[in-house]
Amino acid sequence: MIVTMVAVQLAACLGYFSVMAHVVAHLRHDVGLMAGTIGLILGVRLGVQYALLLPVGPLTDLLGARRTGTIACLLRALSFALLGTAESLSALLCAAVLMGAGGALLHPAAQTMLAGVTPARRSTGFAAYVATQHIGTVVGPPLGLALLTLGFVFVAGTAAILWAFAGALFLFLPRHNQNSAPRNLLAGIQAAFRDRAFLLFALATAPTTLLANHIMTAVPLLGFTPSTATLCFCVLAAVAAAAQPFVAAKHRGERPWVLRLGLLCAAATFLVLAPLDGTETNLLMLAAVLNGIANGLIQPSIFQRAARHAPQGRFGSYYGVLAFCSGMFACVGDLAIGRLFDQGSTGATTALLAVAIFALAAAITTRGP
Image (cartoon, rainbow, N blue to C red; front, side, top):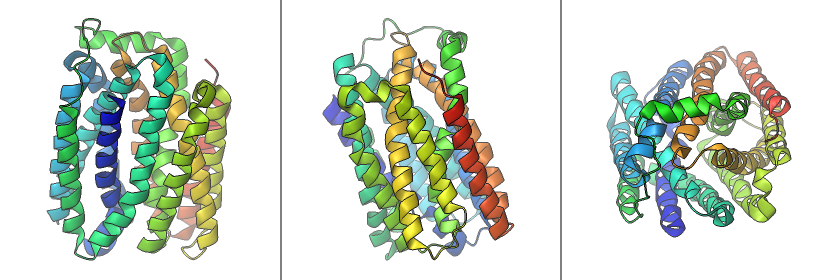
């Protein structure tokens, strides 16, 4: 099962990052959108994805991860096909909604599958899954850059094919026993909200999605070229993948200090980025390394905390609450940051410093199990 999930992850990430590493530049230069409008499109995608996670989490518990994952990949394939041909704002927003809906279904499905393995294999299984994500992140942007010479439509079309393939792979995964899944969709959400320690953890780590994703928006908007941005994202992903054996060994991902260290590295990332103007490649690579360490430590730590708290058959519900909090924070953050970038260099610096402060606040307020 872990091998199949790794294959799903590789296909999905190659498709996703080959497009998303270049979509901001495409929307800015090819379509001619302002930074605030780009922020709106990206914010809508995140908003739909993470708003839906609250009901989709328990729905995954009810329907099963296999079926949910297949539907998710097909929605993502359709969204990328539309994104490659869209020229109007309404069509772009429609693509963003479909992409968000697919993501809302995909992440609880994939992580429910991984949470269902034995605890002894969970750390190494999730480490392999995350490492594959970052390998896809390394290969995806150069793949997109190569296809970009033929036009953005070829980048998006390739992504659509890869996502359709990932959906087919989900059909080879086993059907989990769902006897313990709640028949009432609200039951899982209510259980998560009654778990005070888990709820406080979800609120404290709400900035993590913004911390993980915003560098892909900030780097092109700071003026770095597509090739430099691609190199940055590849370095980031390689570092994050290299961190996985360390996090998996001795179940380190379950230790609170690993999460705090990741959040501090995220804060340092945006402090380095804040004064850049698109010419300081060395400092950009330093930011990429710091963000790679942050992503490599934060993602497994949050997964392990959710898996430890969630009762059997309710991981989707717990994950939905956790991701809903972080997604809503990222949605609002992207909208505000896009407007700040439109105000020039001072606004961009202010936005990046604010993101660093969010990371520091999360590191301070995060508590142990």
